[in-house]
Amino acid sequence: MKLTIDELFFDDRGDYRSAAAIEDRARDALIRLEQENAHLTAELERYRNGYQGSCYACEPVGMLNQRLRELIGEFFKLLDTVEESDSGREFHPVHITCSRVLMMEPLNKVLKEMKEQVQ
Image: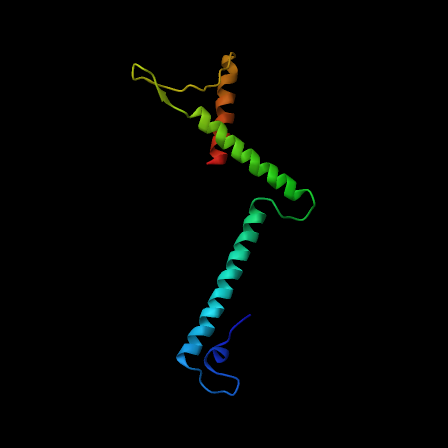
């Protein structure tokens, strides 16, 4: 509901409203606008996450994408874990090995891009 200046300051007879009445009407209008803003923000977030779209398949795909993003984030948290040995040296207890030297660079590129996507 849009509140005009006349509706805010004047009553139905055209008389000025009291300051308290103006404040109450303005507060009510502000509360309605804040609620509308929260609703629209939530809807926008649904579109951004792919939960709402133009076809029946968009929401499940969005949910899957969201879960994959979470899993990739957890994966890199595991890979980035650093512990300290009894001798005081830091080490990564979780790592990925590659037995083909020529595949190490492409693997590192893929892992780097995946990590950038979830950050």
